[in-house]
Amino acid sequence: MQSTLLALETSCDETSAAIISGGKILANIVATQEIHSQYGGVIPELASRNHDLFIASVTQEALNKANKELKDLDAVAVTQGPGLLGALLVGNTFAKGLSWGLSIPLIGVNHLQAHISALFIDYPNPSFPIIVLLVSGGHTQLIKINCHTDYELLGQTIDDAAGEAYDKTAKLLGLPYPGGQHIDRLAKTGNPNAFSFPEPKVPGLNFSFSGLKTSILYFVNEQSLHSHDFVNRNLNDLCASIQNTINNYLTNKLIKAVKQHNPKGIAIVGGVSANSDLRKRMVDLGNQISVNVLIPKFEYCTDNAAMIAMAAHYAYEKRQFIGLESIPFTRDMI
Image 1 (cartoon, one colour):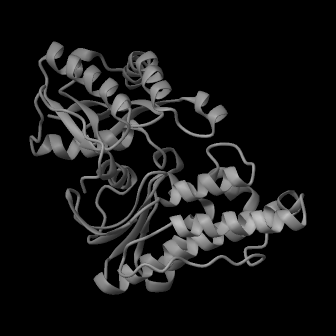
Image 2 (cartoon, rainbow, N blue to C red):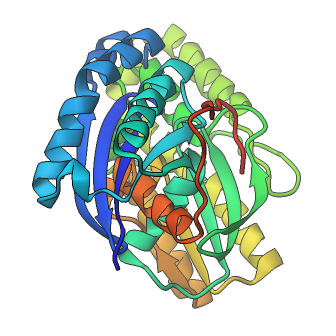
């Protein structure tokens, strides 16, 4: 008998609910909190308040779209962490209420593992092992997947994340938040070799982006001293050069991981996986080294409940449930 699960995502500034039945996504509703754009970043208190406003309605909308009712649910899943504590508490409290009220199991999902599980929505039976580049606003990791539920951390950022580097440099250039998508758009008509920025030097498969952000800041400030409209006159070239530097760095680390672990496939997940240049690089690399390339659809790149549902599907099969006494966690746990 096929299990039907409700999944909830409230780790940051997206309030989302999804329905999965028999491993198939029936609905994935996302309410984006636009209010944060005017502040140039996510305000935790506002995020929590908006989750509280939206969570019941997105849940009902997901049920309606999937043509399901609460009585049809076999379990409820929720992002347990990492994320913003206040935001996580809203989702966890709501999920626990449903679990208790409906007498159904509760499944706690690791947000980072859920990003990986997003791959299995469209690639349910890939060839393993797979090297995954997880790139988002808060995380940058290289992970080896040995099966649907077996993950091995190979490397991660020692300071800032790739998505943060995109957003912070975009803010420096006067672009709206979230800035990564604007850099991607403007870079399409810019020269990626117009300006040169040093690639961070970190041993092994770890990353660092703090120095790169600083070098871009110093360069832009110095050039602006000589020409007050330097950024406006060179905006597209700056975006293309910054994007080229970040994506070169990510790709070079991925290539290093591939050489060390000889996978059957490579993949990118997380918000930055929506970057068009990075997606193209992945396809080109896959063709070059003759391995499978797994890239999620755009709707599954940023935070969403469908990826939580997919991870919960495998957890439900193994009866991996949590109790009502469980608490959210804010740090990485892969």
